[in-house]
Amino acid sequence: MSCRCANLAQTLIFHGLFPTAPSQPQMAISVELLACHRSLFQCSCDAVNALASALHMHYTR
Image (cartoon, rainbow, N blue to C red):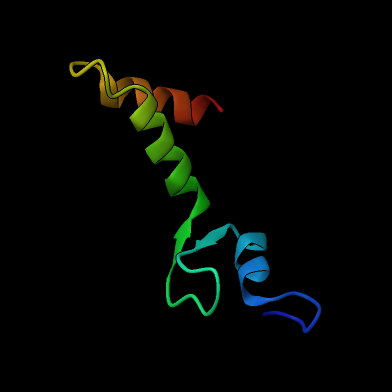
């Protein structure tokens, strides 16, 4: 659902999705998935515990 006072990108972000294009996005990515990817990227230098540390950091936020 949307209204005329917000464009498509703003509506997607309001619902927790990040548009893949600035105008007329065809797809959107979950903001929670992006946060999980960020946590994984921050911990990727430690190859043995990277995934466990990233998931722990993501779920404690």
